[in-house]
Image 1 (cartoon, one colour):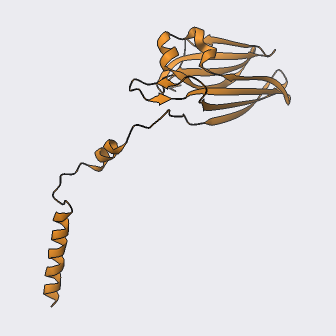
Image 2 (cartoon, helix red, strand yellow):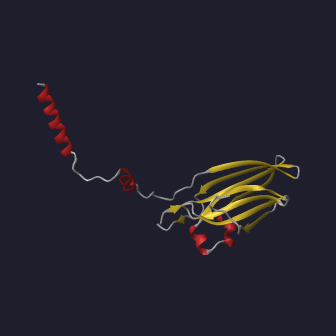
Image 3 (cartoon, one colour):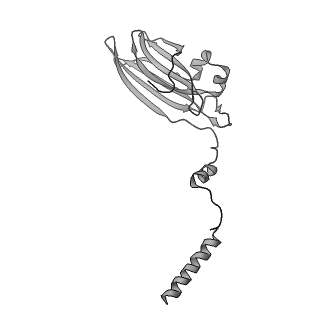
Length: 179
């Protein structure tokens, strides 16, 4: 009796395996996952982030806040495959001794005069980051690059102690993060 039960069970499993495509050639899981991925519809947004810093310069306390996010009101960027991306903006707010000192929303347009035609068309604002205080003011690094994160031109943004902003191209940029 037990033998008939196991034979019947084995036979049923064999029929189920063959009828459900047990002989079909399958791709390894990693390849199957890649082929199932569809190109996202519509523009892609970068990850949003914020950083806050506190620095002392010439006896004044500076509270620095940077918030980067995608902006659907800016022109759409396309990569070499035609995938669309929203460009980013970076909001910089600086308080000096608790009072509003400087505020600006940076977009790629702030660096327009320094960019090649290809960078103007195909690149986006990667971000803005606080560097350190210098004798002439607070310095920040900014990066323009391709939507997939590949680096492009880097810039030094200085906010003087009087609250004026200047931008210059960083000719000694380290876009690989190696120190």
